[in-house]
Length: 509
Image (cartoon, rainbow, N blue to C red):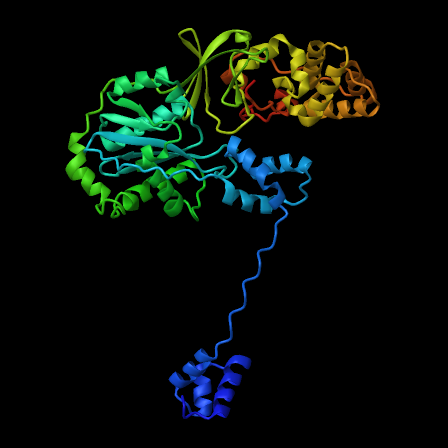
């Protein structure tokens, strides 16, 4: 360093400190060693700039008030605290208030957790997971029923559009058949189908689910409130399903979704090396846990959704956000509704009075035609809103419009129906419909106007309707009209016949 010319030192300093040229470039330009350039620049390093004094914040004058609020309510959120600072004159926003709360809010101690160990066949954890409105055209949220054996980590998954007690029990049944047995205890989150409430001394379980647990031979355990670590065996698989199965999945309906889920569960989820145990869940289940499960009882258990309710005046029962019809005579009666995944049955005492395909839509009115047929016969005016008597079906939309107008008036619907049926039979449906259209164009309705058009304005001659015997096979017989012209061809007179000529053949009479 002593042998270096001061001018070269000055050039190094100029290039390095003023122009910002790198050490390698300076050494190459001035034919110097990089180590020498570093020493020159290090010895003549610019003094560090003094740290700027911290700027004051608009919140500084309100910090005592903020601390006072946090002492009383440590979990108060920034928007609520903002409302309390406004009367004190604070004019800032909520963002800097959130930043200040992060520094001032007392931090709790992190809780330590123990690792839970489960012997083979001891426990299964069960929970629901919500996947939103995922089915095309179905206005119901999709839920995943997830069950995991705590030892082997073998997974069962099933998607549904309901979390009712019946749907939950049916999922439990299918999961137990999938495993081929039951564990000693099943662990659940605080779902309403399992836990109705928590008290200071005990957990109150749903009585129907306790009956099911006794019938299937397993104990029921509920996690403590806000203790997700107690059901980590099922929480992690739910996250695994969300990350690995669900993204990019396409399906037509619920059946297609469950078919894909079952294939993914068997081919991948249970056949992979588990990230925690380092073992394949299916192999651990087959060789260690399966033989230790309790066999399933053969006694069946009622897993239907059951609800008692009254029949409305419109002979409907409301069930699961839809309406189902019953025979009209049951209006205002109390009935029992039973439903599984496919059918809805309505029971009066011990007799089933109606059954419908279950609708998984919302706000639908499901009606069986037989439930109102007899009522329509007793109340002919009820057909005026759009239904035609069977004998007038040939009138089509024109007939429905005509009867809708009749219903708005004071005429007897029954009398009009009888007279129009007669006109259709003796004049034909086409002629009668044409006459009805002409009458409606004049602003009138009434069978007498229609008959006047047919008889007098058009001069049609009625043809009696064919005799009906009341037997469909006999009434369907149709014979061609006989050819009466043969009777006009008279045989020749005997006086004009030549001797020895045979008599002519005649048509049989």
